[in-house]
Image (cartoon, rainbow, N blue to C red; front, side, top):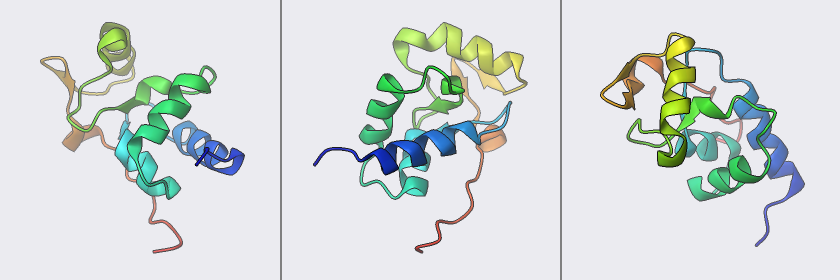
Amino acid sequence: MPTSDAEIERVRALVASIPPGRVCTYGDIADAAGLSTPRTVGWIMRTDAADLPWHRVIGAGGKPASHLAQRQLRLLAAEGCPVRDGRVDLRASRFPFPDRPDR
């Protein structure tokens, strides 16, 4: 089933709301947006995130996308996000989205 415009806009709004120095995982955003899989968030980020703080979205293990790792970690560190051994410290920097209204 194709991703709807409403789902894309929900993901975009969630990514835009992540403050500097904080991060969310693809799964965090999928959960907050009511999507069934983090892969949908990844697809949206690859196709429609040039104007968003894309660098604040990372994998569940705190690792950035391998093809963007150095740039992403540099941007996050510049915002004050703790980075250790090529990973973001999720305990210190994960941004909690408010509970979804449908829960």
